[in-house]
Length: 276
Image (cartoon, rainbow, N blue to C red):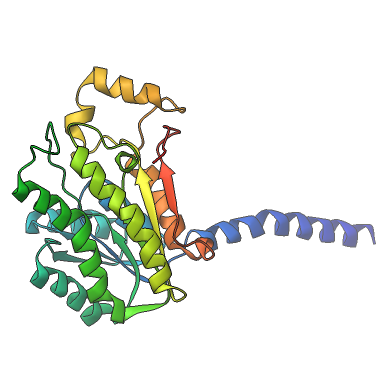
C-alpha cells in the first residue's frame, strides 16, 4: 500500500512537470500548417518577423526588391529549419505584387497571414517644401501598396486569417526630418480601423507601431550616440527596441491567441509617450 502511494505520487509529480513542457511546445507552434507573407522581410524587423513565424511552424514567404537579399534571407531561414519561399517584390510594382501572391498560391494554395512591413523614409526639412514626386513615393509605398496587396490577396485569405500592418511611433507625433513618413504611418492607423470593419468577421486586421529600433532603416537616427541616448532617455525602459521585440508582438497579433482582437494598434516603444 505504501509503495503504491509512492508510485502514484511519483507519477503525479512527473505529470505536473511534463504537462507544462507540452503546453509550451504547443504554444510555440501557433502557426503550424499556416502560410504567412511578410513584405520587405530580408532584413531588420521584417526578417525577424518572418523568422519568428517560421520557427512557430508557418510556411513563410519572404520578399525584397533585390534577388541577392532574398537569397541571403532564404539561406539563413532554411538553416533554422524553416519552410520558406523567396520572391523578389517591389511593393509599388503591380506585376511584382501579383507575382508574390501567385507564387504563394502556386506553392501553398492559401494565405493565412499577411504582414505588411514594406516602407520608405525620405528626410525633408519641411512638408510644404517636399517635392511632389517624393510625396507620391511615400504614399505609394507606405500606404497605397498595402491596400493593393490586400486587394490581390483577399480572394485567397482563409477564414480566421490575420493581417498586421507595421506602422511606427512616428505616426503619433510626426517630426522633422521624417515628418511625411510619420504622416503616412498615421494613415496606416486609420487604414487598420477601416479594414478591420470591412474584412470582419473572417479576417482580423491589426497594427504594430514600433518605437526606434537600431536597424539599417533607422541608421540615420541611431548611429549617433547622442541621438541614441536621447531616445533611450524618452523610454521608460531605458533602451531601444529590438527586431525580436517587434516580431514577438506581431506574432501574437497574427496568432489565434489574439482571436478576439481586431482593429487595434499596439504600440511597442518602451513606454514612449504616444498620443495623436
